[in-house]
Image 1 (cartoon, rainbow over the protein chains, first blue to last red):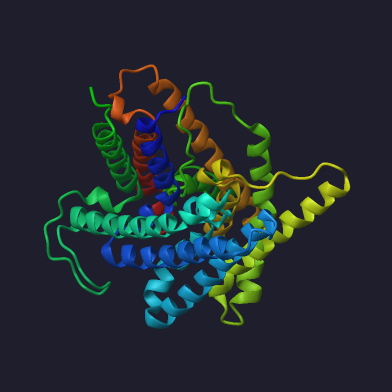
Image 2 (image 1 turned 45 degrees about the horizontal axis):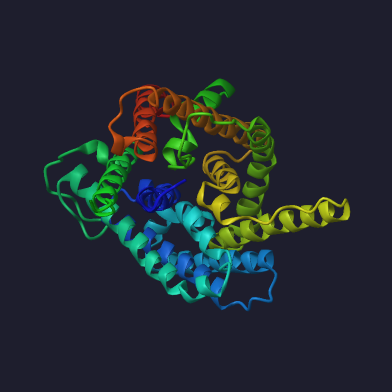
Length: 196
Length: 194
């Protein structure tokens, strides 16, 4: 039987695995912010629609509607990104296309199982903010580690001294995610340790 | 690019598990049951999927300047296929199961299929290249998944620190495989395409 001490980090790590494609793509702060924005839009639309659809709608239709709404919102987001920054669209376009089909977005497209779960729906929305923040932080950390500085636009040249250049590579991102996961497990176990 | 270079590229250098971060999530590696039918399905499905995705993107959306609609078109196609199969299965008296919460937490196979189609479509345009590259990219994904599962099964026999067991070790192992693959990519494929 899985206890609370193992369940909490388990859910977080499964979510982290679902977010991995975006965490790997976010190799600097600008890309991290753009990907986080796309994720937040798709996640929020999907979660909100799943919560607002009446319970009489068959679950599979509600799921399809929420998932398609997330895909439509991503279409809108990438269109706006293309107008604002065509270079960023070329760099990230195809990575953004997969956002509506990532595990965390798909899982919130499922209608809540009962009224109690529907009442706690706001927790899903807050969770989306946390995940978006995690993507931004990953972009920030990877850029800082790989170039030793942070640039706020793609044209900016990092003037810092590289600390760990591998952090900008997919391999560096996966190792970093592994270390963060271990930290999550360690902190969760310390916080949820049963009192003597 | 000749056929052999293409095959080696998608198995090693451009492996989608590594370059796209599509890491299948399993809590325990011990006692894993490999779904060869699932692996064969994704391999076979990726061949037409690459062709269809490229056709939709290059022939339909790009000439109209509607590239941004790709996720919506893929979603409509995906659910269109699902509801068609569902209707056919219901007619045969064996209705399909609806997706479950647990099922969506892991990497959905449809996502892997989509990423295969996207990564192939970025590099190739001829129908034959697309189909071959689609199948090879799917094979590379399946091979890397099996390799990762075997590493995890072996790690369960080692004295890995408790906090690194499970997903953290899986990510770090995937990162080390990626490191090896990127070395192959840098030493061989990058020069090949220069």
